[in-house]
Image (tube, rainbow, N blue to C red; front, side, top):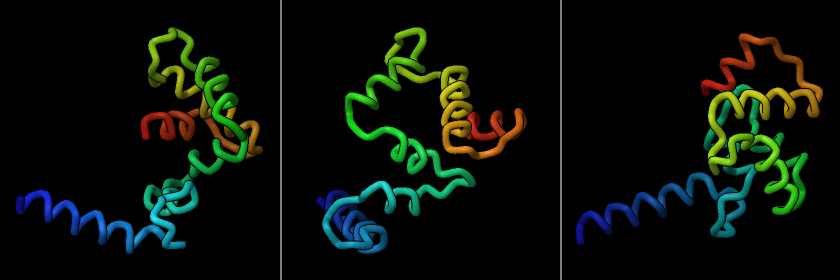
Length: 101
């Protein structure tokens, strides 16, 4: 199947480009390079959540309507708390920008 071959080639190219330590996996630090933002929330979050149970505890704390999703208003609270915990200064317009991003 030509489509499948093309996808396989693209995946190999992607891994060659971003899998810096060539272990066949994309780690958080590598992912941060793929998805750069002014504030890298993935790495920041990873530094403050050590286990999957801590992640689920944080998820439940911010998924206030228990929908299984983090909506924009819930995300804004999460980002605000995360930035405070990481001692990163921000203002309301910047927080809104991060939330929309």
